[in-house]
Amino acid sequence: MSKPATEMRLPRADGSVRYMGKLILNKQSGDAKTMLTDEMLITLGNDIRAKAPSMSWNLVNMADEIAQWYSGYPEAAYYVYRTGVGPDEWREAVMNGGGAIQLDGLTASKRDSLLWAIQGYLDPSKANIRAAISDFCSDKATLKASMQSIMYRTARRIEQFYATGTGTTASPALMAYEGGISLSSVDRAIQLTAGS
Image 1: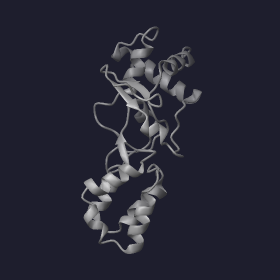
Image 2: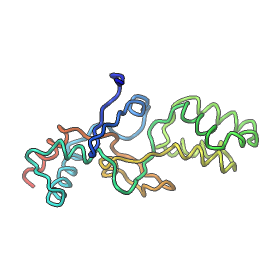
Image 3: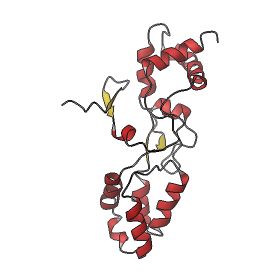
């Protein structure tokens, strides 16, 4: 089955491929960057050089393997706030998370505000979005928990490398970079730190 041209093919360290499209295409105005600056690449290059001996990386011809490793997922899950959650996902969280029953218990204004807000794409990495959803859910714990459960996801190693925060489900981290990393970015990171 072929994937639409709008999706990005992201190889994993285990050889499998993950297709990313929805998150990237629906990204509205999150603060996470999808391009690495030279400063970020230098930090990455230093990390690659520090890990090279223990990972048995040959920095001359293993950039592809290094990119796959950083684009993969860490052994211990590290959670980050998502930068885009769409209406279908919000609706599914309400319906499948057990929160639908609690909608009736909300005041009309809270219920209407919640239903209005989840009609569009929201960026849960922004504190005001999380606070608004929490406020709209009022004291309805099941509804609030189901809404919060889709605000975060597991981070890739490269995302974790640049993220700030605890990285738990109770306190997801904020991303400074979002997505996998390319062979060319790894090559550039290695070149920028060649004199180090």
